Image 1: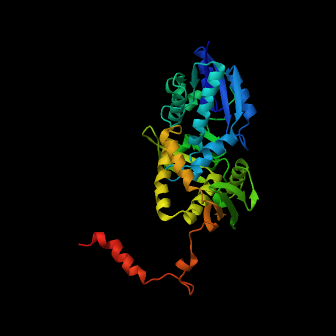
Image 2: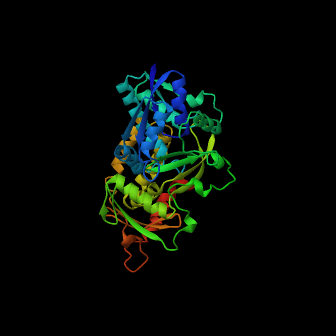
Image 3: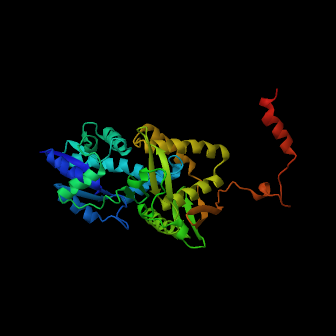
Amino acid sequence: MKKVVLAYSGGLDTSCIVRWLREQDYEVVCFVADLGQGLGGEDLGAIEKRALAAGASKVYIKDLQDEFVEDFVLPALKAGAVYEGKYFLATALGRPLIAKYLVDIAHREKAGAIAHGCTGKGNDQVRFEVTAGILDPKLEIIAPVRTWEFKSREEEIEYCLMYNIPIDVTKRKPYSIDRNIWGISIEAGVLENLEQEPPEDAYLITKNPTHQASYPKYIEVSFEKGVPKKIEGRAYKLKSLINHLNEVGGHHGVGRADMVENRLVGIKSREIYEAPAATILHAAHRELECLVLDRELAHFKEGVALKYSELVYYGLWYTPLKSALDAFVESTQKRVTGSVKLKLFKGNCVPVARKSVHSLYKKELSTYGREDKFDQKLAEGFIRIWGLPYKR
């Protein structure tokens, strides 16, 4: 039998794919990447049993959380990468890491192919296949969802039931969910009706903001050279810090996003996201940069952030441009040291105080009080010179 390594999530599509590939005379080796999806939710042990029940010959499970947050999440945070102003790229950041290990395991297992469960409409197919093509262009790539006979998720559910493959999805709640430590992506089902508000049962880790306490929660996050290090003065490793902020932010309803986004393949899609820690850390990091970066650098970096988010979203992580942007971003983080206090209240995350030893804010220049040292007489000459090119 030909051997293939499948990126297995334990969800509906990949559970069907294991059985379907077996019927196509493939030996299926499943790879499960632990990117934090098991925290408070998916049981990785149950995922392994599901893969074996579906017909997999072997299951690899790797805890990649530290590598994920250090080598993928952190660079994106430093860059300020947020796709179309709302999406913190949780799923997109995980795909190049998963693809890297798919290639590694294919080499170890002497498999000639890798497979994924992405649809022909989605972005993840591009992220997996472009990454694999960069790392080993000789590997065959199999994408069953683009070619198989199933026309709906309901048909896939029936297929799993026929082969006694345990699944967590139902016809009543047919959401497609991808989860990791940085955030949750949710689509399909009733969410495809753009005129309907997302039901509360679609959300997993954020509480309904309207039901939360009538008083705010204040939290202070400290950074060293762009890296979040402390919460309320207590030091955390990055993974633990993110987990803590997910819990605190989720309790206060922070981190929900409902957006119609532009997919890479050219269609628009309605997605909802949950990313409490990402929301808090991006808000704090951005506020600290406002304090320590000069105007020209800060404004130029906004353009870099937009391009960086597109590269991540488009599956171009392992590309020369991405590496070049990383070098630029890293050079901007030398002075991004300090702390930001944020107010979490009924789903909102608002920076309310900030400080840094590298602060460019000078009160004696900004104040309108008695301690004002700004020579306002100089403004007239400045304005004349500034507007000189536009005088007729």
